[in-house]
Amino acid sequence: AEELAEVCEQQRTALEELSRDWRRADRAEADCAAARADCGDMTSRLRSAEKRAAASKAAETAALAAFDAVKDEKATAHAALVEIGGVREQLSLARGNCRVKD
Image (cartoon, rainbow, N blue to C red; front, side):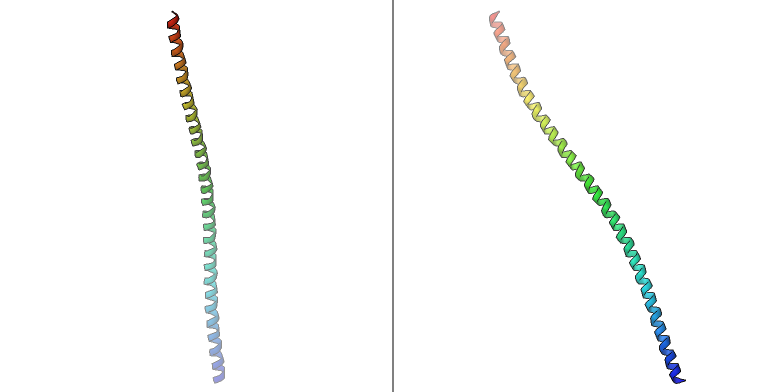
């Protein structure tokens, strides 16, 4: 009977350990599921950030192109002003020549 009691005690201890192991495994599975969900969320956030970065880069490229166009337009306007100045000078000389002939 004493041996039977000892075997029963060993089995009870083994069952308790098995139960604790199952609870640990359940907690580990729950932790793993939570980690997978976090990983999915972070992946979604990363993709969203990558899309925003690509859009920002495209906007920067467009802004630089617009700035270059403005610089080109400014240079063209400056050249036109210089040309207008030359034409005014020629017109002034032509008017002076007309007065001399009169």
